Image 1: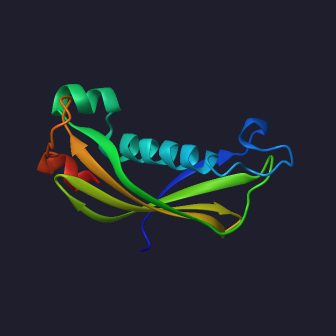
Image 2 (image 1 turned 135 degrees about the horizontal axis):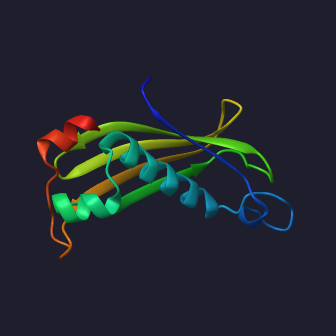
Image 3 (image 1 turned 120 degrees about the horizontal axis):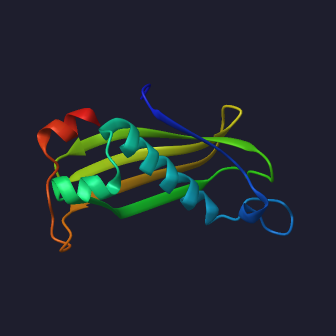
Length: 131
């Protein structure tokens, strides 16, 4: 599990509770942005292009999150996304929210590929190879 995509962000006031600690649901925002940037970087396509040109939309099918430590206001974070398994209809990812090489949150996320009607779709082999 050495190769991963990195997304960097910082904790803003809006991400925190009254004590300056990141609200638990905000981590879902961080990992969602990281997945989106990974898709943009690896496929060199926007979600709109993926939908229009390839009839494929990624949706979260399952997400299991473990909270190990809290992040705080103004922390600099990295979200590392690892592709654990891939097929034409599904991607299984592990995502880690990290501060100074210390893992704060881990998430196992399964993405399904659907078309604009909500039916199961497949990624073209050339796209799948890029991931």
